[in-house]
Length: 394
Image 1 (tube, rainbow, N blue to C red):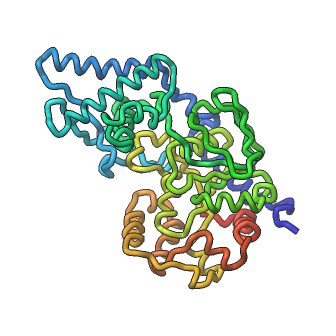
Image 2 (spheres, rainbow, N blue to C red; image 1 turned 60 degrees about the horizontal axis):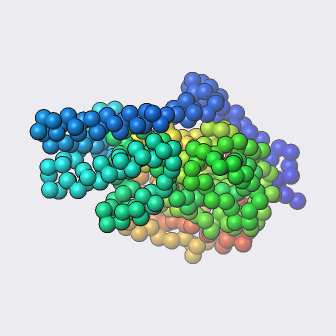
Image 3 (cartoon, rainbow, N blue to C red; image 1 turned 90 degrees about the horizontal axis):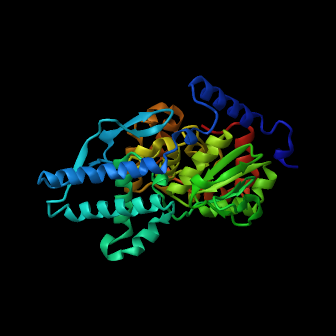
């Protein structure tokens, strides 16, 4: 009855995994979790902060105004593309000065100093705080959560220390479901197969231990509605063992860290299911190649082995999705698509490039839900099974 019951159903998926592992070995990467090799100790964090404070003291002793030098995290000129890492910050990137004697930057200088103090106390006492906790401890000082978030990222980049090692956590919005078990840092055992709506990605991804799965693949889903629909359709039970993840749109840091941790731990194929529109493609690229603003942490956040399973622009014509289920590209969509086409990683993905060109030429987009115009359960019973069985990813 089900395609999934066929003994050769996972032949293409298994072959894909074998290729990924071969490429890992060929490139000299180690199969064990690389993140553990890069672990930053608390003493290293404390030493890095004390070094910055020492620089301030030395400036004051010379009657010079203290200055923080920050890397420009928002500039493409500071980015290089590496196929095995994604978008990473160049070593000698351009910087900007945050001066203590300048009316425009003095407040920001003070905020950086305050955040360094908060982090120092957290690390020294071996405690953790969320960004939200820190913000609400002094709302008037920070002004907005966004300001604090940017300061924390600037500090992480300035110290050359991953944010998770600074003992500052983010509240998770992503969810996971399917064939996955793990223990959280406090010992809580989590069974992702036991929830009818998915399990929130843990706040402290680094603290996750004892991960276990029989999954053949991981499917990262753009939208929560699609994620929930697949759970309701018992996709995980009918597809054989798999793991479903959603970042509920643009993924937060924890969902990206979690996706990378699953790859480092299990080395099973990871596929994406996003809308056939420019913003769906952008979200997929963030998982695979990272973002400019977080390029300094690319080694811990990106999963360059990710493949695009759907919804492909070419699928719309191939499956005869009716015109009324399609949406014309807006001017904003076309500008976003043009921006994506110019990015360095697109030239390394000729099949992705072709799909983007199809979308640009047709000037039409479609949400995953457009497949319901073919049948209400087309996604879970026809589209995904056939894609997985016959290797319909790029």
